[in-house]
Length: 604
Image 1 (cartoon, one colour):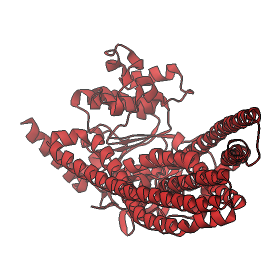
Image 2: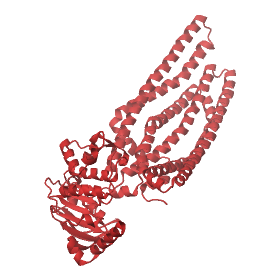
Image 3: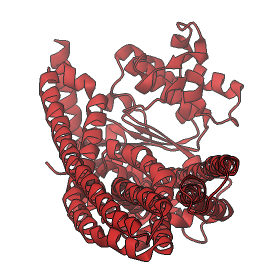
Image 4: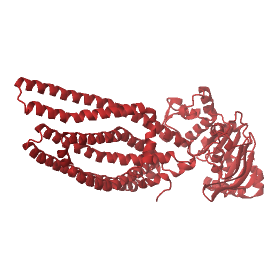
């Protein structure tokens, strides 16, 4: 089944060349222009020093090895030594310059990738929850790791290597024409065949690369999803099925990689054959010219060297095409993510509230995740400061959606939501979320210590406040069992803690931030009776003099709230206290009776 979302069209990405895309990519090098300019200058000097070597060889042969002018043996030996030293000096200069140029480009590349990775991560943090619900985590991780790393190769090897090859090719053509234009033109006869082979190679290899990238992204997404759901996989004995599916994907990946290998295994021998043919033509025609005393032996040797060097960058350019293709696809996907507009925007004149009282009001609010599939329909209610209100209703009635809307994880399509009489769209998101805490049913814990997960690495939260929050939430009851106490490391996802312990830590986290508004989204539904008893006292202290919205699955936990709002299919159908709603014998009464009967059956 194909999921929707911009990440799913990997197979449609990856043009051979896109000027706008490259212009945008190279814009990241502007802060480091001086380093780039110096690196290009060094590259040009290195190329020239490399191309001078055959000329030096020619001069050694023509002047001292097979000179037409009689020379004394001492002069020949002295000349050969001098030219050999010059030869070694040029090679040494080339090595030093290349060292400096490579270091400069690696520095620029790492700075650019740092900026790009930071911008991408910061942009991801600004996207709405709606975006993350649609996108596989594995593919998002691929963007910020694999795709960024592809651009690393592009800046360090692709761009520099491409320019170096172009400089070498142009330089060789110029030097050959200056040495002997007739012999140069004869050697260039083979160029149309090279162009034809290169065009065919590009047309064949491009769809292969595209398919490899598509399958690679698919494998990453599948692998990440299965690691996250490993408990379910093992619980239902689906290991073999998932192994078979993964084997199928990596087998497809292998086959496409082997296709690219086969294409290269044909292309390179063809280029080598054309290189040998060009060399044979030069030796044949140049040899005839030498026998007729039209060119010197040194010129023929230099031409031989240039012809061999001419085909090396051609081979390299075919590999640079691979880097080019991958970088185009990766940069297109990265920029497509950076251009993602599913962001909860703040108004230009958004304001902060210093003192929040905690009054919440929904006024004719309607909301959908998918267009025309309304989750909430014309919802209106008001929660006074310090009031405890519960939301109840069947699954899908819109309870959790209301909590998410208060935090402005989504923007509503109709109506208004107010905090202390101010529309939340007019408030800075930091102000809004700083004054509320949401305790979810599925607690997420980060890899780190228990202390880190309570304060979330916020240095403004004192040790005293951490201890106080842990004491109220009864976290200290189980922390004493750990050797390191609050410094006990939590494994990924809290694997070394029970569900109840993770939930208690989430309560302590909410307490540590001391919010004016508390939202409990079925926070006790996964807790056993013993743990629930421990947190009831904590809940009483936590919700005292604090606006509290409790989304409840177990109705027994909300009998003492100030007011209960009953939702049904996205609408408010009842409202009142526990006793008042039972007397009405409406939806709430039916839910209560259903739970009571279930508990009776279980107890029997």
